[in-house]
Amino acid sequence: MATRRDAGDELAYAAELMNQVVKGFEDQVRIGLHVCRGNWSKREDVLISGDYQPLVSCFSQMNVKQLVLEYATPRAGDLAIIGKEFHEREIGLGVCNPRTDQAESVKEIAERVRDALMFWSPEKIFLNPDCGFGCFANRCVNEEQVAFEKLKAMVGAAKLARAELRG
Amino acid sequence: MQFPVTQVGSWPRSPKLLAALRERRSGRMPANQFKTVADQAIQHCVDLQHQAGVDYVVDGELRRDSFYSFLTEKVEGTQLMSLAEMLDTVEDKAAFEEMLQTLDAPAFAIRNPTCVGKLRRRESLAVDELKFLRSLTDRPVKVTLPGPYLLTRAMWVTAYSVDAYGDKPAMADDIVAILRAELAELVAHHVEFVQFDEPVLTEIVHSSDDKRRTFM
Image (tube, rainbow over all chains, first blue to last red):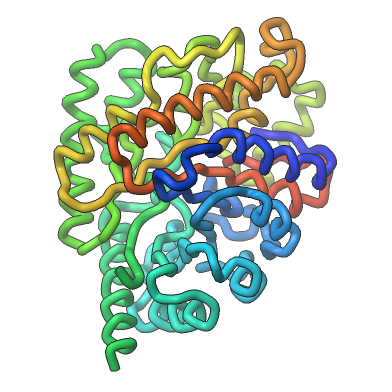
């Protein structure tokens, strides 16, 4: 739970704290940063909306190898904002909404992967859901069977994308 | 590898695990008994990831109250508080309650790891999770930790934290030290991937109302 202060100062502070934590470890382990827009409700209308543009400078200051970002909801905005700036880093591409009852199709996930290939090489693109399937102990945002179907769809899409690259 | 598949961290909990978490929280279930239930749940979660063909495996955060509030079990100087309990520290209670309803926030499900004293890592945060996960899979693994900014923002509740630290940055220094110690241990145990969760960054830039809070 948190209250809001001046955005610029807070973002600089967030980057500073992260860099203090990871200093000296950057080359020893893959370090990722996960950002999303909330995962406390299945109601889309109450979760935060807005693209990553205002966070670009904060991300660029942070010494993390991978950005693990929500992208399976239109509330996250255009992939190009991150793609143009951070193609040298890895992207943990959010391709499943962890809060919906229906698994995304292999076809639509593969489409997202093709979008990402415009900015990143295949080794730099990780596939993951937008956030966790559980999060808060007595309010999980999904059922195990649906989560399992979503994992299978991501694996299917990864296979399809690998096959397409082989031609 | 091209397009490795992984997860962000948490996995849905079974009714059995939810009951065990509740019993554990209230002190009615001994640690070893809880561990048995959680171990089984994690084994099942890892089996499903193997079946699905995931490349980087997670433990589903199934031992944790939430992805960050579990700190209270590992770090001295903390107390797990429900939003309902924290209502005591809010000045405009009516507005706060209204906002909880408007945002569909589960006031009794979300618990905050409030700083109530000097913070000290009593035991590792996630090394046990890593070791157990390793015993279940030959695949590379991802371990998630709450980011230092999220923790600083969440743990500081002036009414409870000011006596121990005076101000928030002083508390943040100890949070950084705790996370660095954790990262060093995880690296020593050859973890492949550590993910820091900083979901509140979007809240800083995208909530238009100064008074608005979010829950993550």
